[in-house]
Image 1 (cartoon, rainbow, N blue to C red):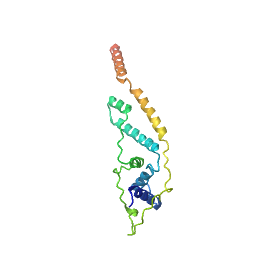
Image 2 (cartoon, rainbow, N blue to C red; image 1 turned 90 degrees about the vertical axis):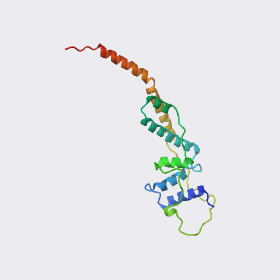
Image 3 (spheres, rainbow, N blue to C red; image 1 turned 120 degrees about the vertical axis):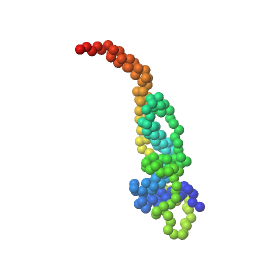
Image 4 (tube, one colour; image 1 turned 60 degrees about the horizontal axis):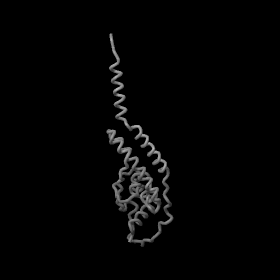
Length: 183
């Protein structure tokens, strides 16, 4: 009996070695990336850094969609709970490839993955060991740190904006009242 993890590894390795793992085949790339992003091949801390970057970028998108300054400040200040699907690796693969596939992904075989013979080889535990190396996540720590600094700076810019705005408006009104125009 083949487990789900074995099936996913088989499909990822088969797609990679068959030469079908091209950028035009987004489904194949999603499957390879999802397997490489599992806890077996990626450190949990790296996965969390990646998902933190995804959450920060999502927050930035949400901030550009709103106009209310109070809502904007609350979005900058608070962290929202990320809505992960069932599988962290699939969320990483979906975001990394910008695939917008439905999650959880259906791992049914297609194309060259469908077997052509009636023979069924027994599964061999550990047969994929050594075929996929450890996944490296580069630059996410620095990005997250820089993004958090940007959020702090934006909070400082928006701080006491209404008070300063009212003071500026009063000064402008006073300046306008003091100007006399004569002909």
